Picture 1 (cartoon, rainbow, N blue to C red):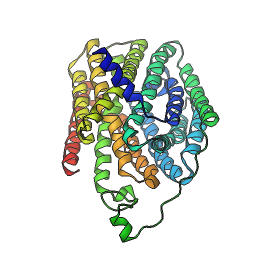
Picture 2 (cartoon, helix red, strand yellow):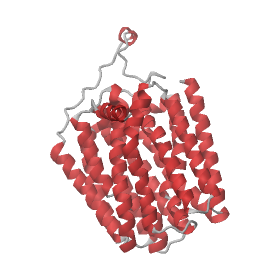
Picture 3 (cartoon, rainbow, N blue to C red):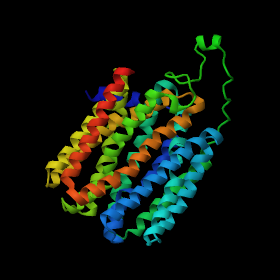
Picture 4 (cartoon, rainbow, N blue to C red):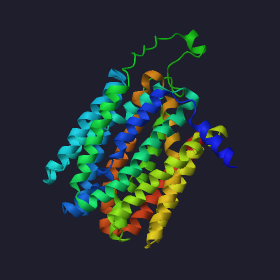
Length: 410
């Protein structure tokens, strides 16, 4: 049994290019400093003494910046290439993050957060295009999982360390987060060579189309993701899922603090547990599921349903054990949904339009990130946490229904 498990892990990590490993290393450095986002709501309410509603507005501005940033990131990636977009995003985003800690005025804070996320989130589509560029098709989902492994290993380190730093001084979160962004950019600049430009495909005629040489999308024959109706439906369902999942970074820490009476260190430990479980399990799990040829949309559907179940634990619990049950369920759900959502997105695009496809997908996530704190803050302020969790479960069920319908159409 042990040898079989060991071979499974060995096969899961084989066949990935050195550049993919380097990109994962850059992501690890960057995410080891990811401390501001999971504690931003607490920083605004506990340190700056803003109301939950005001904190929701700031988090919504965060999402708006991410929405615009991912759109620009996709366009810039297709225009200038993923290398320079990633480099500029890391360097300038890190500098912007360092200055946010000195801003206390509400409107200036909103503007500063917007600028940071606008700069920082151009990184997302560029990084995903880079991963697909350096990966063969049959290893693409595992490459995304390796990147997520780096994200979550960094999340485990950053979450645990962030809780400890927040208990000392919230300002330390901004210093560490900003500096690790800059260091990650310098490592990318030093060790990842500038890729050769990719030649755009020549226009093809009808005879070539019948030979399978088309670079258009499989659904519509268009180079635009906005004309790929199945993919647009997929993005909408993904955005609804992200709206539920994003509660983990906004109102869940506040619920842990105000309702379950957990300390910042305990909250950081739970966040770290999420990352550690993904590091230990996800790559082998994804490899095993791919070997069984289970359709991606079916796995995504199961992940969304598990997310709904995780929020059900928060709706009925008032004990700290409920926080642990929630974290275990949402972590398993994330491992089933996230890597296959990314892999499905890349699989729908041609090499020349991957930036736009990934940008549209990321824009759906950014829109969810914008709406999530606004809806959540209003729901909690008027009806309380329990009602809010039931509302989030309903949104998750709508998303699951959409993925079920798409799986039948696809």
